Image (cartoon, rainbow, N blue to C red; front, side, top):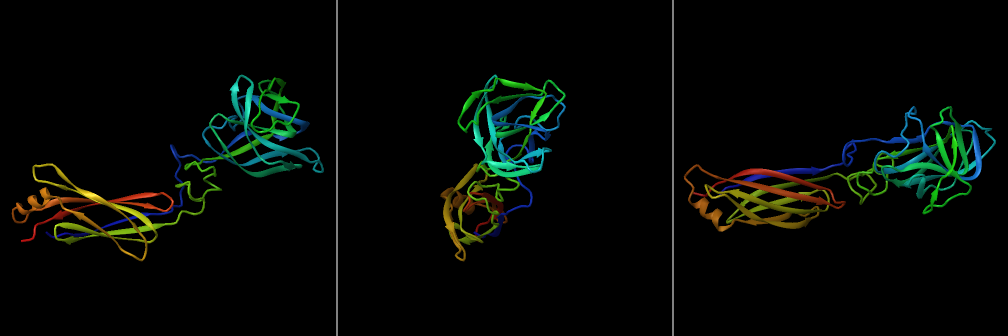
Length: 308
């Protein structure tokens, strides 16, 4: 039997970001308006809004709020302590507060604050504390408010309502492909795996197949510690396919992993009966899993010939 060849594959960090489902990017949710009034010790949410504003009122897809913004034209010397609140609808004007930022202090101008709050599609944003509002000419812009600062975990009816007003807050929502609670664009530099938020380390692996009497020997090297499973199939003449039992080992540089795939009896018999110049098709498959759970596979076809 004669056999020699190589399987080469890689698990590598890429410049682009892959997201679960359809590709998406960060989106601003809420009201990017300029506040001209405020109320002390309140919790407020936008209940309804006219369709004329460009930013969505509710979170369009699951993700993570990584920043929130409040724009103010009130005197620059005045300060407005407030929190971003994440509201989840219950029924009608009843909402549960499912997340909140730390208390921040806004002043005159554009205020941008960092945070990290996982959100679900359909959630919406409001604020609590010294709540800032924008005037609107549209009666469809309706806010709901309560006369206290509600904490996360609270469910309340927002029946205290005011027309022609907008809650002055915008949340920046980033995708979270691996569900680790970190935004994929600015907080998570390895969106392929929830096991790491640092840059995904590239892992290169190579597998070479060589002859060994009655078996196929696969030699595997890798640039980092990986778990490797090597298996294969052989197509038999007029008798279907024979499976080479897979072997799993850990390969860690600088050592070479040795994977011995024994040829079953029907393969040896088929080889012995092959006419001169004929061969059997061997399909070898190496599956590599790195330390943060990324998986790569490499497949290659080879000709398996009897020794004469």
